[in-house]
Image (cartoon, rainbow, N blue to C red; front, side, top):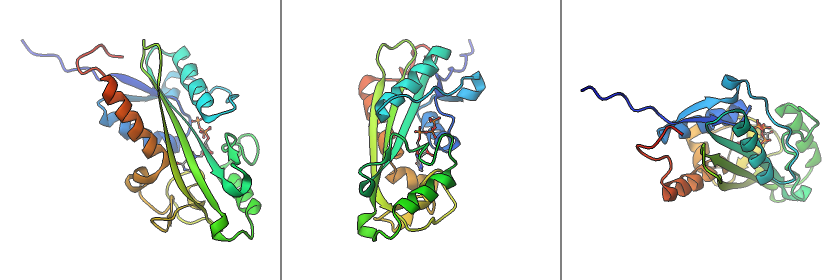
Length: 213
Ligand code: ITT
């Protein structure tokens, strides 16, 4: 008898951010799962009404689950700038206004910090990941943080979002000046993925020969 090939468990990446998709999809594949996008299922993004990153990540995951019966992975991230008392935080995506482009957000941030010396430009990226397997009552929730500094001017062409102005002091480079692998070693998302992987390993998910969910 010829054994039929094992079907990979599908997982929907609950984000419309192309930069996040590029960073999350390889990790999903590395777990032996099959990454899918919201666009493949015509699922719109929910309104992000939560007052914390965790609330919004849970909201995005719950919204995607309501539209499909597959495992989902949602990400809510924010930039916390010390000189701005933790702003933009939960409002990072819309810092320069609803639907703002990355360039607009960066311009507003650089104006807000204009004239501040580098030791007063400390900041951190925080990422909350929610992985919710189909049919499981509760989700896995993991957090990652990356500390750095806001540069006085953009540097580099890689990455996305605020990467050109976020410097990793240990490397002396912005997140837009390093490749994806190096970014994932240091970034908030890379740290959150590591934490999530540990949680999944402890829980034995995905089940090796289990159902496709
Ligand atoms: P989804 O809600 O569809 O996932 P989003 O872009 O709205 O996409 P968030 O609500 O989490 O995502 O907003 C986070 C903001 O922070 C957004 O402007 C991102 O571009 C930015 N951001 C998140 N991760 C980043 C990273 O690794 N490097 C640079 N900017 C990042």
